[in-house]
Amino acid sequence: MRSEHLFESPQALREQLCDWLTRLLQEAIESRGRALLAVSGGNTPKPLLRELSTRDLAWSKVTVTLTDERWVDNTHEASNEKMVRETLLQGPASAANFVPLKGEERTARAGERACCGRIETLELPFDVVLLGMGTDGHTASLFPETKELQAAIAGDAPACMAITPADAPYERMTLTLKTLLQSRKIILHIEGDEKYAVLQKALGDVEAEQMPIRAFLRQEKVPTHIFATRNKEPQCTRS
Image (cartoon, rainbow, N blue to C red; front, side, top):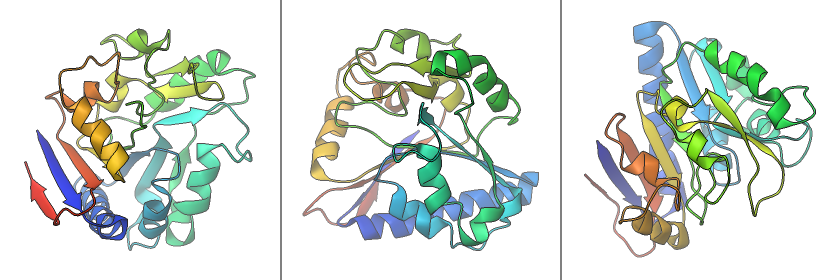
């Protein structure tokens, strides 16, 4: 259920991962007439999403949403929606349908119900969920040591939840573990030796409350593919 793909350079990783994503989206369009993709924010996926935007796909049949969002205006530099619009939703991919997590409500807590409603219209499962990981082991906006974490990774969680990280700025909206696991494939994209070392720790004997990425790595419901760079390692694929 879990495979690991290691690369010497970010460019080599991005090229192969972009090929994978293109193929998975194309297969979804061919078999179901549509494709559903959830992507993470931050800096790591930016070059990947720019490359993906150039690929030859029936983009009008692709719906894109986010795994999480900072509760800021979509013109704010910290907005994941802004990042996705400026990287992925360009050129041919501008024809894709985008479903935001951020609404007009003043707080993420006030926006939970409306956000859940938008996600529930998507007819899950996702075809692909593209996750990242922080050096504290968080993914999406499932942060360790937040009061909402246990509820957000519980089996009866709603589609999305407001999260207030202890050490990161801005209130967040995140898809919950239950929602993110409603996917045909999960891809974890990390770059650099520091994050690779965090990944190895997460693969060890730690609790999801300490490193939330662990909840995805230890589950057996959805095939999970790790794409990672590691210096001085030959390119390889292993399971």
